[in-house]
Length: 206
Image 1 (cartoon, helix red, strand yellow):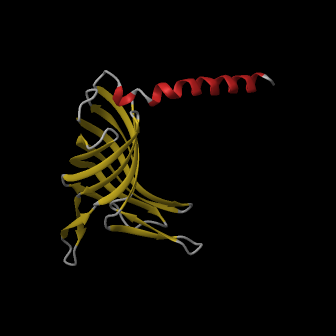
Image 2: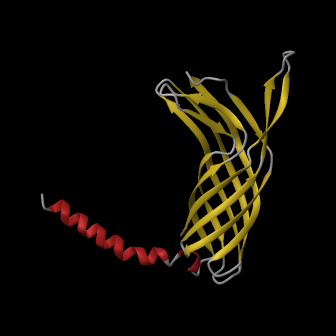
Image 3: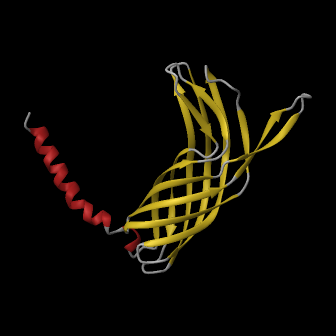
């Protein structure tokens, strides 16, 4: 059918026409409220568990990994040297196989104050609280399940604004968790787990 190539060409033309509009809206628009979405790849923190595969490989689950997806809003007046940002996200590290898996997940709330160092480069400092943090495992990967009690953490970040709508970030988060673990006498010990991590992220501002 010739209709499909025609529709594809029209879609491509429409997207090409829209890209400049998207690239130069964002933080340069007159509206000071800017919805945002983002993703970050993170690494760090204490090892929580490990799984070994039948091919000889292995994979660790850490308290600072691995992928964080988030959305929120930024208050930034056009031309202002500062901004305030709030987000809610889903942060997880996961490993899975046909016969089992392990996952550490949490829902972080972050508040960040940002300051412009140059027109395209800005620094940020803020706080983070990871809600409903838990480790789960099943099947051949079963090593137990546990709920983690989050503690308020801090974060610092640097962002390069590729365009007013797109930012590339480097970030570091310092945070800890408390978790109950059985002791030798049958009681529970309160262990501290370090979830501090670094990350590389990408934000899109509307």
